[in-house]
Each structure stands twice: as structure tokens, then as C-alpha cells.
Image 1: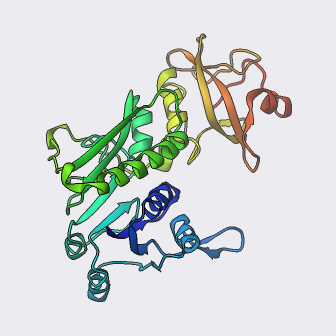
Image 2 (image 1 turned 45 degrees about the horizontal axis):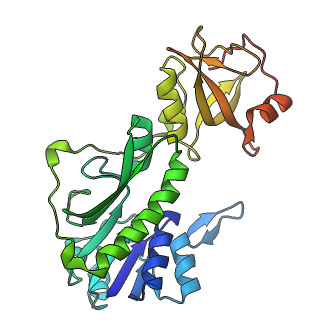
Image 3 (image 1 turned 30 degrees about the vertical axis):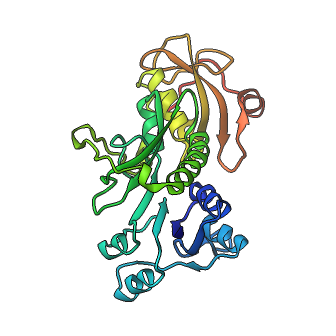
Length: 301
């Protein structure tokens, strides 16, 4: 098929690679414009733009698709279908309707659960037993379009980072499967009554509240790893908790209970597995405690 690919972050790269490898004609790759990055704030192309350049594919990176000239340029590509994966820009109706088969989105949840910007974070933090990828026919609403294919995977004890990599691969394979024989994947309307929403993670959600249940804090830690990272204060120093496990113990919330840094919660306790001090790389608990001892009885905030 003649495809327009639209994506920006690492999550979208496996899909672009898989579609190219499957022999589809990539008419153009759309991605968000390069952003300032690093200490020098030099413009850095998106991961999708970098992969497109490596594959020798034409790239467009408009700041918006709303101008008429952008809509016309998109339609002029004469695509059979547009494939969208975490593109990050709103697609006007004219863009949605331009390809013969419309626009298909790789959404990282089992729709209609977790419509919105942060479906993987929300699934982990909510304690969902499974998540997955939905290949969805896009329409004007936010992730409301009919579903063409769903693939699933257990959440288990995976972090958001681990699930993101897994779902990116699953989404790439699922999209290749769908485009191999599109008519065998007819659209199936979502049940709006079962919908839930996945808003972007707010910075305030990253601070650990030790009065929460241990199970909820453990999910918060996994759900925010590696970014933005759940954090707490240790004697005025901000520390990220990258991985933790529930543990036996009780006490005033936030109190360190033993030499293994078991921490009392509102109900139960957790034990850090991997932590990160400001400006330092992540490290295992024993290494962290070697460089920054934490005495039992210390109260974290």
C-alpha cells in the first residue's frame, strides 16, 4: 500500500521500520519539528525523523496541519492510508479523510479503556491486569474511532518504560497484519459507556504520599518509571524511586523501619529496589545506601 506515516517518539519507530520492511511504499513521513535539546539547546530531530533519514524516506515536519496549504500537500500525496503512532498533532477532518482508507492509529491500550495521552502510565498505576494495543480507525473525537484489531499482554510487574517498548513492537506487528488484508479487519464501534480517560501525567502526581497503601505506591513507582519518576525527600534531598517492592512492616507513614530501608506506608510497607539521587545515575539499593546511609527511624517526606 502507499502509506503516509505520522509519528514522533521512540514508540513510533518500530512501526515505521516494520512497514518499510514489509514492502509498503512510504510516500512521506510526518513528524513534529526538531526541538531544542541538551546543554547547548541545539535542535534535535525526533526519533522518527532520524529513522526516516536512515531509511532514505522523505520527511515533512509542519508545526500544524491546519493551514490550507498543509492540507493540500497532504492530500496531494495520494496515499491509500495514513498510519499514525504518537504523532502529537491534531489531524483536521480534511487530513483524516484524504487517504482512500482514512487514518489508522496505533493506540497503546485496549480501547475504550484509557483514551488519551498517557494510557500506559494509567494502566500500570491503576493496577490493570492486562493492557495492549488497539488499531483504530481515526475520527474527530479523542480516541473514539472504531477498532479494527486488538492485541493484549499482561501488565504483571512491568514498568511503563518496559511496557512502552513491548507495546511498540506489538503495535508494529499488529499494523503490518492489518494492512496485509485490511478488509478482514472490519471496524467495530467502541462502547462509549465503558470508556475511561488517560490524561497527561501531572508533575504533582510524581511525589510519593507515604500515607497511601503500599500496593498503590508500588504501582505509582512502576507507572512513572523511567519518566518522570516517582520521588520523595530525604533530609531535604529529592530522590527518585525507580523500582520498589511491597514488604512486611508497619509504622508511621514515611518512617524507615530497618537497615534495608523498608519504609512504612499508610498500609503495609515498601522496600526500594532502585533509586536515583539528583544528578546521579540510577543505582541498586545497596549501592545507594553505601553512598548515602539512611538510619532506621529516619522520616521521609
